[in-house]
Length: 387
Ligand SMILES: Cc1cc2nc3c(=O)[nH]c(=O)nc-3n(C[C@H](O)[C@H](O)[C@H](O)COP(=O)(O)OP(=O)(O)OC[C@H]3O[C@@H](n4cnc5c(N)ncnc54)[C@H](O)[C@@H]3O)c2cc1C
Image (tube, rainbow, N blue to C red):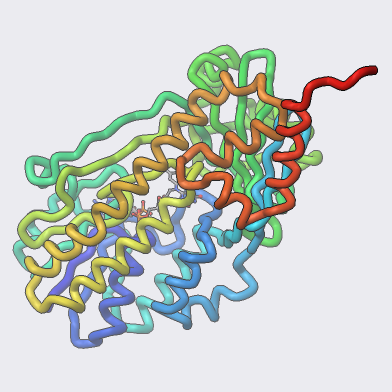
């Protein structure tokens, strides 16, 4: 069987790795338009559940990642200069470049044919020469575009602007910071992904973005953009600088496809769907897709049966995840309207934003936090006594 993968990101590499590991006789080629060490972004995040799942699939990858992965169990919400900690949230962060390098290394030693600097402008040519064509070519997918009548994609550019940056400030949890500048609300999503660096994504509405002049500063974040943001988040950065990596302000693109498969072609990862960074990382979803497709291929010898099985089992899961992610996206888009809330109820509202977490769930994660919140609520409802 001949498998061709377009895109050497986490989805494509992980699928190739798993398939080749199970059956070394498979001929698997991965075409990646960039060089092996060329990657944007900074850190990727996995929940403990995802980490356990990935480890079960390839323990060797995790053995090599040991010492390179940062873990934490707190979500920290900063509002009105007050920090609210919510425990019991287990996450792991790792540098995106490290993660891709480890995946490449494992693919190479298992015998996957990795072809870097191999741009595929016309996937139909490769499709005719293989049994299975995997479109793991990211958010702006050529494969999706080539069969768009079958996949029927919808692309929705969301309202907020965001920029992906990093800093040496070592955040000790997944920290969500809300800062009111004269131009409006600016929000940061930050977490440590290596001993020396944390991801720092800044998000804001169109109005504050324009009012602060970010539309007129350089398109790719240069010094002026970074220094301005350092000023807004001065209390959070502890004097550390912000750095970019080909970073620029963009709008989150919500990608959906009515179908993920067509003929012998399948979409994986960002090419098939995106989910806002406020609910977790696209890398997690991409790698879980790859596991689902690998499992479907294990259950069915025929490609069309395997693809039908993959679409039937995985798509409903991702559709539900995208619903939760959209609720979270909207919460951040409308966050300015919530700023009247005191820090504690604001933090609870923020934790509930996707609809996946309720008070009982939160109680299991961090009973002391919920007790504190309930005490605050009770004090608010208690009639004032005689003075
Ligand atoms: C600016 C930006 C920064 C990001 N930073 C982070 C981050 O720090 N942490 C994080 O968790 N997520 C980050 N993300 C999200 C993350 O990239 C994805 O959710 C995740 O990588 C999805 O994995 P994937 O394998 O589906 O796609 P990708 O990782 O995007 O991989 C797709 C690959 O396909 C290649 N490709 C595309 N077209 C072709 C073609 N025609 N021929 C050959 N190769 C092709 C691309 O070069 C790319 O390497 C970022 C996204 C953006 C837009």
